[in-house]
Image (cartoon, rainbow, N blue to C red; front, side, top):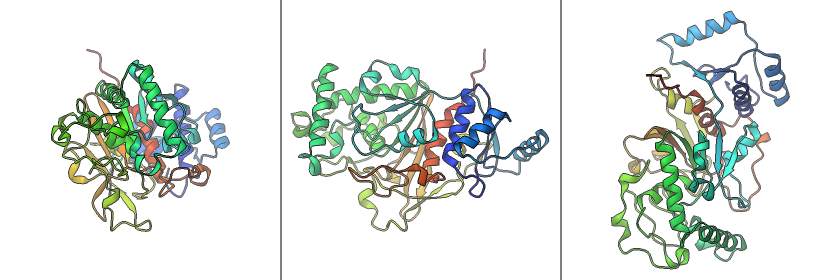
Length: 395
């Protein structure tokens, strides 16, 4: 999985997932040649690699032992992690998804990793318990319809999406979309606390935490929910309820395309398209295998990309949350990870790793043109991460 030898990094994850689905174990060689995978040698796996265009090398048992011995050396920042079981994947996304795309859905499809889509009804009916890993599509959990009101309130897709959301809320027994989204966020919170793995990008990151922090507070203006917001709601926000963020200030104006001070999009004066790169942190593979897994890549410097939530204000991230990727020009956090209860969450800023400033209605990214994308690799690290979960010891 290094830069020189692998023709298709993204589909290599699909091969690994496919192998796990055959009830075969895989060793993930952390920090060894870009985070390589050691698979059993079968004719079927070789053939599948050839079909999918994934580069591989055949090695003897003796060579494999030699590599594992090298990795186990205390002087090497490497580790071999056993992947045991292909995680069952859910993507939280609306049924009539808007014409702009979702990076996770695209890369799962490209890598040929199977997933199922769920939305509010399934979440509220506790269907999340059927899955090991959950991705949150670019959602707005605050009930403000993505804060698109200022620029798109007259657009047919916005009017249709609002009508559809209100109809679903009514069907599920809610007077307001914001109340429904709050309960969905609480169900997702419980899923993670109970041991689930959650991954979110773009606006699903900060809007999720905002919804949790404003659990019993009306922060929506009349154009969103038909009545006024609570007076002085900023002072009522409870930061103890959030996963990742603290001390943020909500954006009150309904015409401003922004949720809060968490997002760095409007604060990146020094960052331009040509200088926008973020750096992956280096962790101890033997002592910190989880962040090491999540940062596996063939480069430590990854091309930046924007979104409604591009990146996160460093001062507003809780101290127990790990920053795994940062844009050093202005110290913003791009890629963060934390533990909540028995589960884990990862937040990744931006919309599409291979489309710098994706706009509504833009054509979707063709991943055939980006088979070695380091930005997309980070998503797939999160997909395989649950496969390495240790089995509980019998007592």
